[in-house]
Length: 314
Picture 1 (cartoon, one colour):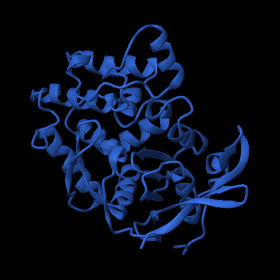
Picture 2 (tube, helix red, strand yellow):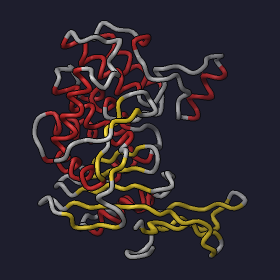
Picture 3 (cartoon, helix red, strand yellow):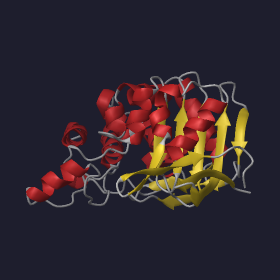
Picture 4 (cartoon, one colour):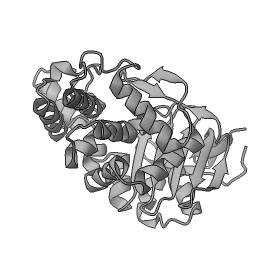
């Protein structure tokens, strides 16, 4: 049964409730915190990007620093993001026309406003998944694999992604769906997803390289003011990655990890829920307290809050 993980309180009245599941894995690999249906399969959405980046790295894509961080991120489409994506593609001998993610406006509002003023429209390179797609194309170029079909689940690169995800999670990824950006999406249990995050921060090789790049360059994982970026800035050593439909993962430097799934798909409380779970695992989340205080506005001023709930509330 799902639990009430957060409540939306307006002027003292509980207006809405977010049901879902959250699991925490201790550094020794044991489940130390569990609420809701933690063994239920979820579609991890963009929380899989660090593992897709690790697969690209394992396949030989020449990625490091900011380029590896943006491969693992959901960027906000700012100009410095676009330049990095274009550089990845250029070094692979490709242009932005090779991207197969859908055209999109940037998530960063000032950037979008500037594009509108300039008479520009949606583009693939501004889409928040373009870093991942550029990394996939770089891996294809490094191996001589076909670039036109890189999103096919049977493509050699996507088979490597499935292998990496299964290895990290300790379970067979299933089912295979299609993500919003068009890439194959491999299902995992929520516990498996948290276990994969332990692997990301504790294992050597491509996993550790991706985690280190995300920690060193959080602005490429999200962007200006993005919750994931601020999470990592406020809690140095932590890795955090959100996904669509209310999914979020986070891990501390010593290997404690959490995975959240809000069943109504809303992301507005996921960061606060993850912080509560990390604190239950013994992590000091005090520096990130501002991220756990989500105001409810009325007339442009705070009149309530979105608050996490105690264990056992159904």
